[in-house]
Length: 79
Image (cartoon, rainbow, N blue to C red; front, side):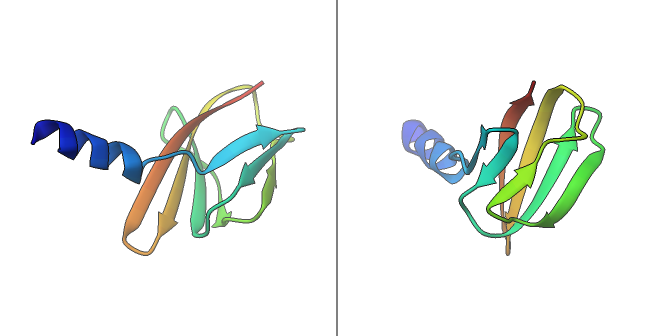
């Protein structure tokens, strides 16, 4: 029973974005927040197909995709 709960949690938080040619490519719909590791929201808006990483400092960021009551998170590294 515990294993099935963990599997469900993993499926809810599957990847929804990747980096390609200096852009964050999002392939799900919703509100996208880009949060630095200090918890500051660096960018927020409708999840578009591509979000440019120009102007962002190198480091680790958390992507938060909000779709109604569902919130998905993903870690991403900007080089």
